[in-house]
Image 1 (cartoon, rainbow, N blue to C red):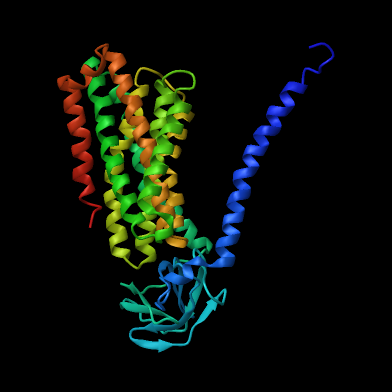
Image 2 (tube, helix red, strand yellow):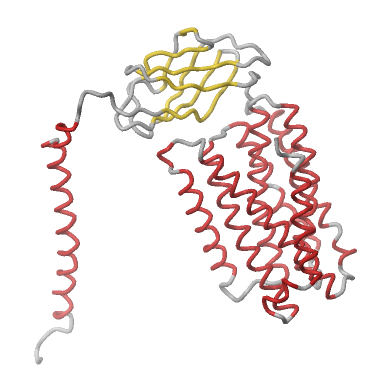
Length: 396
């Protein structure tokens, strides 16, 4: 139409879109305001106390007594009225003070003279009479953030994560001479060990999620995090085609590194909980357990000659997260974040399984039938079997 502006026809629809966004939001706001003002739920209240829940996320033992970090998960704000330790009531301080709303956290400090090596039971009593129990199986001083402790943890994490991966990668020269069936065996071995790590990480994530506060919806969080990690890494990895060679080895190292983060959390938590002997046993078991992971990282690059710095980078990517996990596990452990880390690692490992399986099928030119070759079946069984047997050393 002559004389009309080219933007005139677009202005009305844009305003209409904004209107149809504003109207439902306004109705929602009115509904919320009415619910608060009219309080129609009052007719359903029968005098019963509100639902209360407390989750213990952290325990610290030092020269001043016992400190626990608790998270509230009830339907209404709750007030901590009393604290029992070993069936005796003790004076306590709460920081921050006051009622705890849903999702709030607070530190509860009790000047209790705990005994080294003994077990202690804590009971928190709310003003409604509800009680929530927490057990300290073995009382030992909680690790501190001093230089000596951090240095020791670096050495320990390196022994658990970095050293075994480096040892596995040292087999690279000896593996370069394998033929077609040997390459199929090694790639299938990688798939087998990664399949075990995926199941192991996912199961551990679900177990830890069950210890977290209900408001985190642990099992749902684990599934969503693993799925998101898998899809994101799959999209990144295939941005310029399916990864091969050093790119695929990097993804394998990343997936293993995220899993080693979870292993570091387990060891750090064991030491923080006082299971020092158990921690030493875990260290030896994890070291043997992780040597095969280095071989799995080397498999996709056997037909290449990467520079030495690439091997060092792959070793650190796969092994260094064990150091970080050990720090977190011993100094700031919380079940929900540990479950989240393991879930992300499980998703990353699943992405690597898909890519290594695709590489195996391409290299043999047989499609999905490549996984049915005798050398492939032997590699799958060897990888999963070795990881299962060595896992017996770290499962209690």
